[in-house]
Length: 111
Image (cartoon, rainbow, N blue to C red; front, side, top):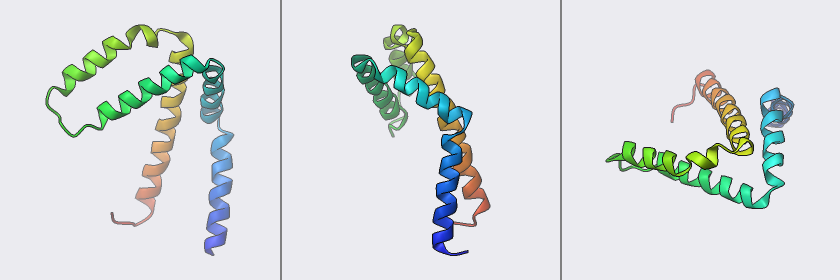
């Protein structure tokens, strides 16, 4: 199989992902939140802070910081638009993670 054929197969696979129920739900929920720019900005701030917190290398008092973060955003997460979007995003991320793991396992590629 040529490199060009592999790239074309990857495009086809991306199309299949974008027509999956999981992706379509994520896209739908994202578009609903985007209709409220202030809310979308706050969602992105939440996502960035969550990402940063989870990727900190200093593990000391991590549990305390996570609990404080969750308390700070507890009311925010009660908003159905926010909750629906974050749940859909998590489901999509988990699906993509499974795809990445499968590819890494199936391809004998040492990192």
